[in-house]
Image (cartoon, rainbow, N blue to C red; front, side):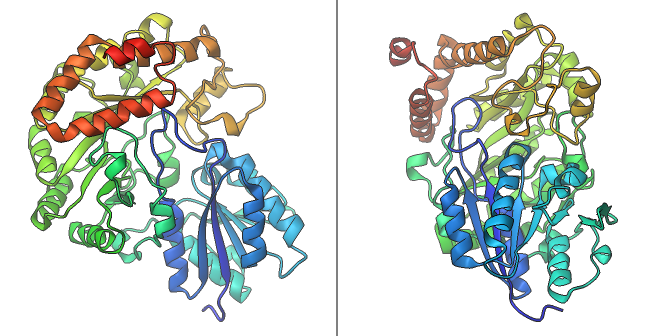
Length: 490
């Protein structure tokens, strides 16, 4: 039992990914994982502050001086690991002597897959492994009451020079038991989406991230979700999700929501049930999420539109069937069926965003250059084109390691998907960057794309402003550099 209130600072460092870009990162979101931790810790009576940290380290020092935290927690992606460790060193070296020495706790995707490596840093006291809310709160109680840390499931720490990893904690089977995330307007006001989305950026208010489910039943070669969540999926009650949406509208005026479920349509009946409940509420907001294309059908699309879903994001990864089947788990890349279902989605006015990956070891220049044509054939509205990146905890990492394709010295900060990382067998990093730019230009500056946009915005006039603002976003980020005249004509 907690006997007194602790000051807790929860931090997410942006690493090298400050701001947005046109090729991969076209929006900013609230720090949802930390907000869930914060609300859970506040139920125990603690004082919690959530912060996003960029390049201004003095801002972080000011936070420490002002708040004097007892605990500093870090949510860490691979690309921000080194920067997060640097912040933890500041906590220990510069502020440990000013008051009770702060405890540092790391959690998130990267520490979960590499707990021994992280906790061996002198400035890191604990690693929380996997789903964080229950483990974090149990660890806080152990810290406050000087309990044996070996009794806390799902953590790593160093004891007498030895790394201790306690048994993994069971998943939270009913996510509705968790309090709503601790949301603040200062974070929601920074959450903008520059994609083709309705409402467009100029009309968006407090864009929020919401979860309907946790986990993913698939194990794609490039994704570490199985290492973090296992393959079990736990769903919230649709009524409770809609209650959270109503609270967002009431407290923040939210009019756009991103469902950050790893695979929103992993269970068709759950999707239909949620859409039925949401449609019955007729809330003044629109939303989108990430879908598995081979699990979408016409009935689902009808339900999504009725519930004011306005966009589907889905992973094509590679339009080459043999490669897609190899890298995606239990995937059926039936192009005929894909064209049918996306054609129907276009008829309904849904915006279609495809995720594509280039730079796999068997990619060639010729195969990559077919990507834009494939996306035109599918009727896609928007593409996100990243580079194959072997994140720790994935099969792809082990395959790249065994094949000798990893750099001699691993640079975690370069694992962003925004630049080539692998030592590709035949393509240089400069060639891959050039191919990325060429595909994007081929896709957005073709007469075929223009005709598609004119047709779709004519049939669905509310999409005109979103498209205008998206093309302006691409232009302002240099996508059409050296082609401004052609862009203006289009």
